[in-house]
Amino acid sequence: MYPPILLAVMCSSALLGQVAYSPWVETRSVRGLTIYSQFPLQDVADVQTDLEYLAEDIETALGLRLADRPVCVLLFAGRREYDRFLKERFPDVPYRRALYIQRSGQAFVLAYRSSELAVDLRHECTHALLHSALPVVPLWLDEGLAEYFEVPRAQRAFGHPHLKTIRLWANLGYVPSLSTLEAIPHMDAMDANKYRWSFAWVHFMLHGPPAARLELVEYLQTLAQYGVPRPLSERLAARLGDPRRAYLDHFKHWTR
Ligand SMILES: [Zn+2]
Image (tube, rainbow, N blue to C red; front, top):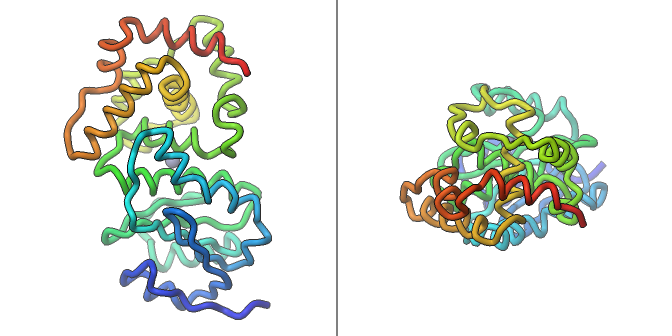
């Protein structure tokens, strides 16, 4: 067994005062994240690797400046510990295997040790880091970006599991409607297809025509400055003329 570590006040809030009772055995700060773990982090070295670069990767890809206040990441030894903590501290939050929660100006990511931990953490930490820089993020874009960054950094451009299906449908001439994705009102309306198509448009903007990425960067900058940007579907149409054709060109020819 490892001696428990009381939480430092790096993630200061009333909640963490309560969290201090939990037996964290290790704490670690990486760019943008302060991690508290109930198990030794060396046991999950691969989990740490991409988290170290996640904030930098997001800033580079999106031209964003993330906030200085770190996201507080709580890693639980198992599902039982995670469930107990959630029930006690966040009984109002809908249950999921990993969570991003914003409370009293502090961002938290919670997850437990499992075979999916690395993906869960990259996904939820992407949400948390994005929301540290942006007052609001449209649901489809929030999820599309989290899907993009949830895989190891070396897989994002060419090795993402969604790409096979997206390319298959692109070769059949199918283009998911961006304006339909933009109209998704709440999380309950998200399903596996919408996650995948949201990712597809994110991938197109990040790796397709440079003008598309520029639209995304300008869109996010407007959000960061508390502005109300025109929807990306309209911006891409104005900039690219025919974004549907550009989307098909991008994915039909997207190979390493
Ligand atoms: Zn998500």
